[in-house]
Length: 64
Image (cartoon, rainbow, N blue to C red; front, side, top):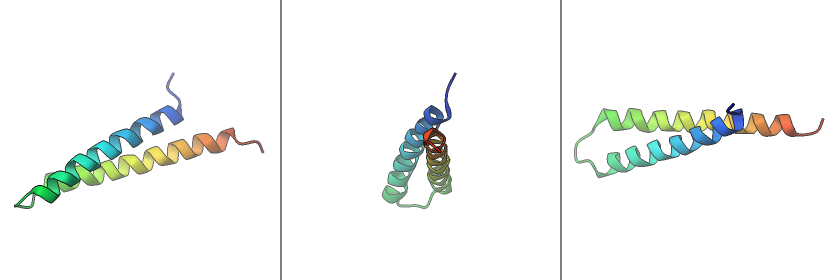
């Protein structure tokens, strides 16, 4: 069974990869392409969700 921390790390890796790739494409394009912007923003959202999952998992492991 996959834990929330594992899912979070996966989303962080995917988010960074998607954002990096599409941001690079946006900077190299001579003409504006909306698809790259949408994918880059989707990567940022994926990264944020992954961060929250990892933080929540770490918070649950702290002693009270």
